[in-house]
View 1 (cartoon, chains in turn green, purple):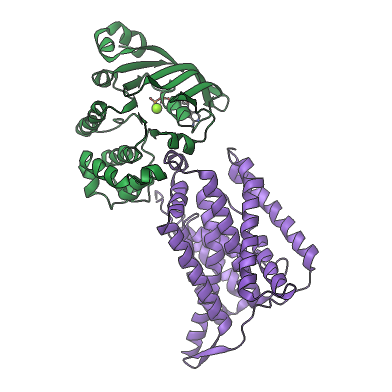
View 2 (tube, chains in turn yellow, orange; view 1 turned 180 degrees about the vertical axis):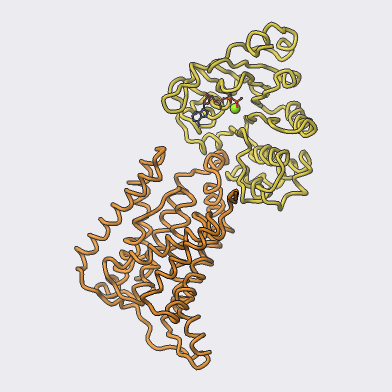
Length: 236
Length: 292
Ligand SMILES: Nc1ncnc2c1ncn2[C@@H]1O[C@H](COP(=O)(O)OP(=O)(O)OP(=O)(O)O)[C@@H](O)[C@H]1O
Ligand SMILES: [Mg+2]
């Protein structure tokens, strides 16, 4: 059963077209990775799915229903959670306030207590830091708040945009621990990742992006065992 | 000592009055990056609605004030829906809305002029007498203004700090995209913020006019001061704006006493320029500049 189905998606900024007829399908409960060179439209794809950017053509279906004309808040209410690239925390709010905002919608708010416990057990650092203002956190802590805030929402599809970008190796390992935990939890996840080899170890399916389209997709294991694919699309 | 009490009392009254309209302005700027140049006209409109409700309709003062705030809120909402919303996506939004609200301001002012004429009028909302404090008579009017203004500020602080709607407003002001990804409907936040700001402007207009009378142009001076206060506090910093308003009110009262009314605004602006050279992002502005 596919949860998300994108067909012929076109989107861009001003006069610049970024996505040129992108097709992407994500099965319920699967862990999908979207990889590709910088600037080829990975973040733009996520922004179009979450409604921050309007699709110019094509369709996006979620659980069978069109969502490409909905507002971002409606799309969140449908259950699509987007943890954006660069964290986008609320800088003047504390860690706990940031996390609570993740459960802003009534449905999530009703479960905020148990979710918060889950987030704290997955990211124990956040419990220590809960009263600290977000702008004073380290890069790794900020990333954890961003991910934790997304987890607070619950939802049916979790999209993570470059969760390990710009972090020290040891912090990347910690973040990957969390991603690994999510991967085995049975949630439906779409993760954008720079490090294709590393994410392929976890992903059920790899989607390779090339200039606004999906150029190849296949199993994570297939991606790992066929170096010629990496050579063709990711330059080695 | 008596002089001291008098200056403090009038300074706090001024400051509290400024604070009410200034936080409205600051709130709108922080949420939408919109400098609302029609604020002065909204002030006047509020003052006149209260006048009309009491004088012509014979309504009691609290009802008249409430009516004025409702009308002010309605005007704020209309400005959002008819003018701000259509411009929102534009990369030139800040400039466009600045010019557009100047236009709205002059239209509103003309409406007031048409309806009520150019002659000054007295705001019927007037409490006679005063209370003796350390040998000085502080007018009830001032105390009432101070009380209402402080209650209003406390109310706004509670709204922003303790309610779900307030959290949504703060989140939207800090990061619009992220706010939307939390499920916040930012269009609704913008509408609420403009309504609140319109209602606060009306209340401020009633206060100002209860001291200095009604004129169609009465909002210009308080609006200018509200802008000055916003800039001193750091644009868009709402609690900072309230504090800066009280400080500036006190300062204005002291300058008035020491040098006379005619110098107050000039000296105030001089001080403000000094502050901005010292701290370009305002007293409570967050961003630090790199000094060479
Ligand atoms: N807000 C924006 N305004 C204009 N152009 C943009 C904007 N955001 C992205 N772009 C452009 O759209 C293209 C695709 O950007 P996108 O962020 O989707 O790439 P990406 O695949 O996520 O890259 P990265 O790996 O660097 O994050 C780039 O050419 C980028 O310059
Ligand atoms: Mg990106």
